[in-house]
Image (cartoon, rainbow, N blue to C red; front, side, top):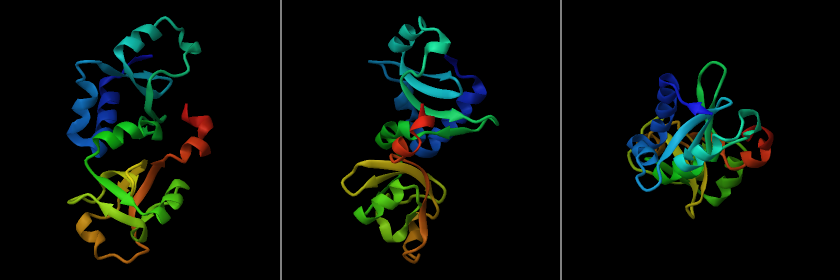
Length: 180
């Protein structure tokens, strides 16, 4: 477990900025309980400083995970967010998409969100922006990237893709071997 390098921090914050924008400050500047990002086995963890100091006494091969896994770095150096950070993304997200109950299950199986399943969308959402996908009752289901802006979605037919799927809570069951 080690601190992130400058390049790794830039990749992580670039990806997070796509979803939560300037709200990254709320993740880092927590005066009551400071948190840090740490790298362990190509995975980035978000952990409180107190727990990080306690984990130093555990040897690296014996440490499975620590805190919340925000994502992992690929062998080429690209960063990919995991569904395990969804609670933080949903809390601080700039743009949100609510889908109808008939669209929840297809999204949880890994499909994109089509216009027929769209319930609401945040105003002025640009094209290719990171969005958190919520059910109509406000439960976070996953996250993705918009295919069209809010203005363009009004003109599309019901089978057009609105949000490209990135991750959903169904991955806890589908990919449980590779999440941690």
